[in-house]
Image: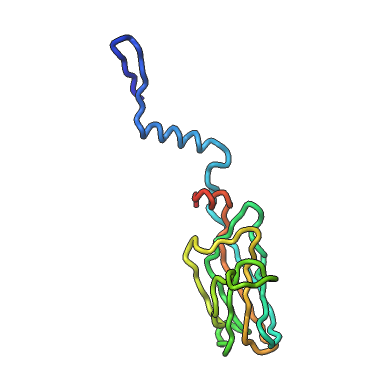
Amino acid sequence: MALMRIALGAEADVVSGEELGDAKKSILDKIEGNKPSEKRFIARKLSGSGVSTGTGGFVVELYPVGPAAGRAWNLTQIVVVGPDDHTAQSGVSVSWYLGDSSNVGLGQCIRPAMTAPSNYEFSKDVIWMDTNEQLFAVIYGATAGTQFTLMALARDFRQCDVYEQRI
């Protein structure tokens, strides 16, 4: 900050734009809740399993069901395996959904027609889950009695950090 004297005896403070920006940032950082969390995200692992009935498709829900209030999850990876992690399940199709498992609709589909076993990684910050959403899969074409295990990885953020793009 510079002090400037005017010929008439008045004084005025002159501040650069950078100094004003630094002062604003300092003030905003002191306001509680305005700073991003120290730990940017919490890694979450979701999982679920089910046994095929052999008729039509069946739903497998992943748990925990969804983020707690005030949190948002960024889905990064989904995995499906049959009775083991290396034997291909002929004719099986696994479609992944994000929404309400009791009311399945194509608008909820985030990854259709995966084979088993398989793995898919989403680009960072593409698929988000809010508190009222659930991750689940519908499995078609499986032989009766075949066990399937589904897993997913998610990054858990404070919802305010996501909405204000501070992640």
